[in-house]
Image (cartoon, rainbow, N blue to C red; front, side):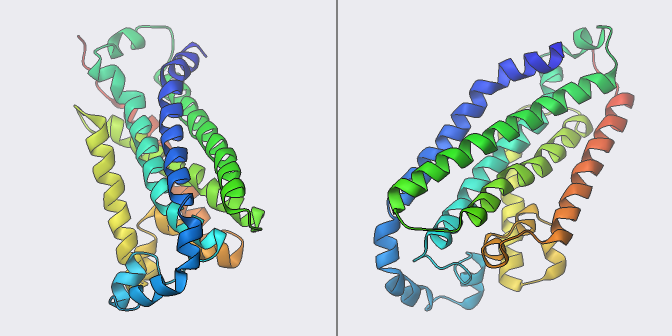
Length: 265
């Protein structure tokens, strides 16, 4: 519990900064909703001139920007990218930070097992992601409600926002695995940015090609916004895939970290 509390103390402020940035970005884009919704027909006319593959890749073929959920869903895709970078960043940092700071051997000298260390670190990451998701969802609800002043499906809105946590768990699990697999990570943020945008590009290809196999290669396809709006639910096959990968990443992290040779100072 001491490790968990220490991790929370060290990381809570950073999580609040990232979440505040996400909400500020949402506020900025939602302030343009009235203008966009009024000119939706003009925007659709302009978009129709683009190649269909480009329109699908950008997610403009399945979302109605004149509706609250359609516009919010489009903006949310960018918010989700930021949240994913944060999730991957804290996942990678959780176990690699001790090696970069050269305090890993000191931590391992304490009367705690490596499994306990991984568990405490993983729990702190999950807690941070849950808090971020809850704070963002509440803030987003207030922003959208006040600015739009229009009725919308609150259940779908909640499902869209919950995907921040579910996609975040994927990237956090991947980050934990990378933190014990890569010998030395000098700077976490560039690595996190590169990986997340790589998955985002895969999602754009998936939307452009409509390839069901390609969809399983990127977590952004598991919680496709247009599909959530239309079905008012998640697709069970993708939720199961997400859960299986998260569990697999976590188990591999335990196995590798138990056997890992931790360098001393």
